[in-house]
Image 1 (tube, rainbow, N blue to C red):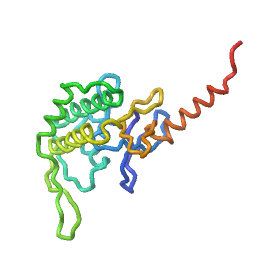
Image 2: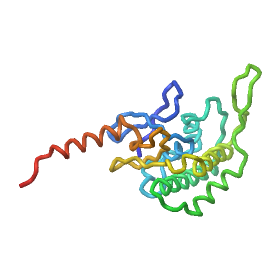
Image 3: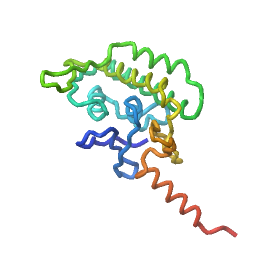
Image 4: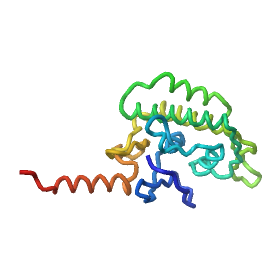
Length: 207
């Protein structure tokens, strides 16, 4: 995984991440729930944790593919549940990417979060879309969890991939028409792996 950076002003889907070498690159995982998995995770992924305070989840929501204007308040308990949901989604997506059965404890976490009322969108008098005021972390997590339900049960459930680079574990939905996306981002892992392959092909052979 990589560290998070700021979102670009054009609000196109996806996130700006920063590599271990400090180089920013664009990563679109293709789903809101998978955007949450870039914030850390269980086990070895804990080194990438960025959800330390409730305000960190508010910041993530503002950088996500959710529309702007969300008036969000997050409690410490909701932050803890966000990390639990994030970990469950990450492990489910990894299992799906590698053809493993989805595990019941992780499904239970997603289903419990999805059962709560989601964020509420509304239409303003001028015809523009906005959010109902006073959104809570629980509503945010319900929206993320419902997105996960749609992903894992929908037409792209078999298109969940893990980046093919040897040291990258970012997860994404391959929505390309041919279904042959291999990298989290061509400008990052794709180019890096091409350089590795080129060097391997041209390395001097040992006697």
